[in-house]
Length: 461
Image 1: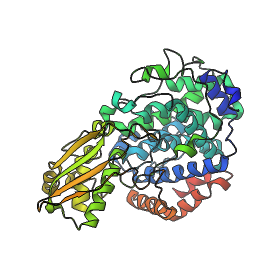
Image 2: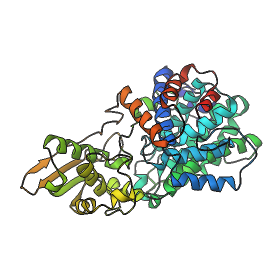
Image 3: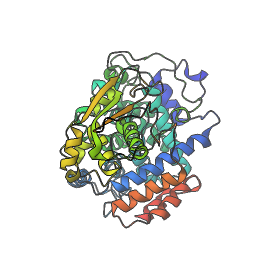
Image 4: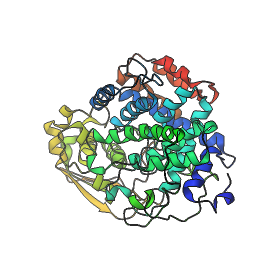
């Protein structure tokens, strides 16, 4: 599909056409390379999260309604699950630690990869098809997300659950493209739109990763239902009473703009940002700033009189737990981020425990943090401020300032090295405690573009 051919085609139909016949603007290889990074990082985080309490709860729930299908692997399960159930478990695990990648004001890979892996395993699809499916899902997600001028988080929407189900449905439909018609794909996207959900009020609880799991599973369900003949509106995405209009924070959504999907992939413009810390991404620039000041000035936690952080409005609204008492709450606390960086010199998996969160020194430091809001937004992602900053005043009267922090390390504009990405992967596998050779799995995934049948990935678990 080309840009010009989409101009007279309504949005839902244009996206369905793209799913069946995607074009890459001559940049398929580069786009798939980004998809591979997202896939590698998601396997890391879904393995690390397999033993989280929320994953055990979801598995118990699914066991009560488990089908006899054995279609796809979930590393923490003793046997195979139905594809939708496997996607559910793996997406919950991938999001449980808040360690998964970021783009489009959301966490695309933690929905896309589990859904794609489950369906690709069932179909015995190739590695290249997995990567292309990822790009298709990302592009559909980006096309929808880019039409809104206001911030979904401030309205209360969790974009990962809301957009993820539609993007993942597009990816799963691509894997099934040989047996689906354009009408069926349009139905699948519209069914998925009616499954969109997730509210910010549930951040800092087990329900947040459930959003991702439900989206991944519902995406597979949407495609299967459409294939079986379940109908839906063929304009549910762009209708005045449809998906985009319904979720728009203030009605400032462009329902009529011709789609440009199929030109230069947006995944190459927007990329993926890989997390270095297992906490909400809104806090990562501040963490980098505190750690830099600590290192540059040999700063100790006991030296600090006060800390002022400057962040955006959406960040302040999301990081709402000012004095957290659980590790889950701490993931959405800028006060915890600052205190952990000062006390431990890190904000890592080892610090994300209830015991560390409730240490007396942590509690005292968190009460010394003040938040200042900046209204200037980032042109690349308006949910974020243009820059964050940190100002630390010591008991000795020194004032230490970070200056503007535009992008944290790991951001698409400030990327991790291949060695750093591999290091995170191996650390996550070790943290999982699963009997998995992390180095061997990483090398296998690294060769995904040459893999004729992705079902061999299950041999690693």
